[in-house]
Image (cartoon, rainbow, N blue to C red):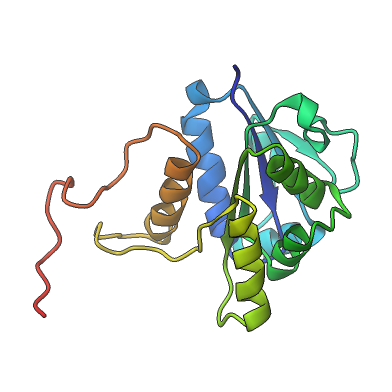
Length: 196
């Protein structure tokens, strides 16, 4: 069975995570057959604010508007097996948790959940309200995975891209990709011991 993936980009700050995810997927092109991308208007605004102009021609993905319900992954019959929303705004997360599929992004997430496939949401928000936490519980109970954009630092990151990659590589691990990344106690140098 071919590996088809949906990438949702919601209107949260954190466009660096999306760019690193896109770049990593380009490097892993031999491990997927089709990638469909849907970005919110606010995601594009944030990308321009945080990273400069967005150029979709740079990526070998299929881009769809949020109102395009003719996109293949709007139906479970298209057999897209994984969806990653990175970053995931609390509004998008709340609509997914409530089953409100009022655009292509939330419809695709609804399809992934109902077909018992892999949904990975990467929220980047702080602090979290009780509403946010309850929505995350609802998604987890429905079979989704909440993977917060919380970087690790034991890999001795040197650039902002390295920091973002610690999150993205965990997400790609969760999505089932085979990738080379820093792993605890497997790097060239072990992190220093921490005394209690």
